[in-house]
Length: 288
Image (tube, rainbow, N blue to C red):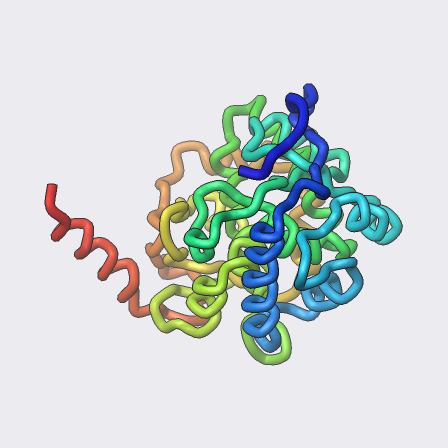
């Protein structure tokens, strides 16, 4: 874990401690940055690429959050604040509602390049921050923060969390006659960038809000289904929605499994399900 000085503040923010990153930590960033930068052209959406180009991001060093925030504030009013790891939901939503994006200040170890349970600085900055340069995503994530505080009071956070998961983290977008990545969980992952766009295994389904709110997701493996926007402007519509009536309408509605398809789905690609089936077979065959 990256060394920090002092305890977290009441809002869980800390000093990034940029000067204390080691050469080894900068080298991990460089490995990840260069690998994703080679992979994403033709796979990431235009807005992600534009955000990358506009931000002070370099391959050879972990970014300084202050320099990132200067550019972000001028563009969309957002800033990046350092946190030591995952923060409580209420704290997370409060930051988003005030256009502060909490980013872990630590970076994964060299033997964790392809999977990390807790989001690190590469996931949070490389994956999320370029899209915060886009006014549509900037407004949507702020609205999500405000909605999260309300959902928590109503006991409906699990349904709203699925919207964030299947858009901000693992969303795909139709663009240039194909599918493009805008979700940070995909954009920051070499393996999932290939899987989400190129692999025949997952379903790719047109985005439908109520459908997404009923759909569970995978936190331990690739997604079995990805939901696809026709354009980022659909997120603006979501940002304006009063979710309270939706929560009432979905009361008692059946939960959907990650790989489940409905007759009403706007199906873009019917997946083979091979990856998930193989993973289940390995689990069953594992010694107990």
